Length: 176
Image (cartoon, rainbow, N blue to C red; front, top):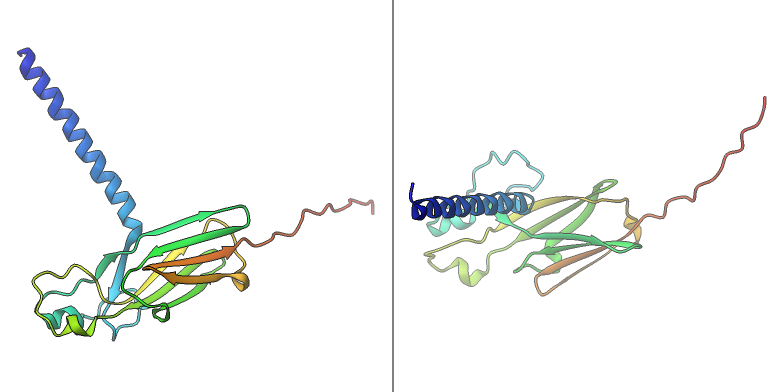
């Protein structure tokens, strides 16, 4: 094989490796952000999603988007965790936040159609609308009673103080 053919083969192999690595990383990062949306008449707790979408985007002549990305960051300092969710086009009253288990944060929401857009014809519809539920596994126990949530500029920010663990206590061993 000529030197040029070897260089071409090597370059193609590197390009293929880079492309597959990029797709693998994109898949890994996106899998957690992919969130199921239901039509407004279907509750977010219906995890099976068997009921067909009978409202929303389908009425606009386009198939409804039932999945969308809601990017979430979870980071912490020594005294609290912060959960940051990018959810543009919503209002603070569209969210319901609860702890569904000791270290599981549940964010429910409803992304509504803009009335102006609902009466328009669409050529492209990439945003998902309807009700969603996003469960986020927290790395440490938190004190829900002192939690705070704000929604500003399309970002839901939830501050969760870490639960104060009881200090270690020694137990004296005594003879019988």
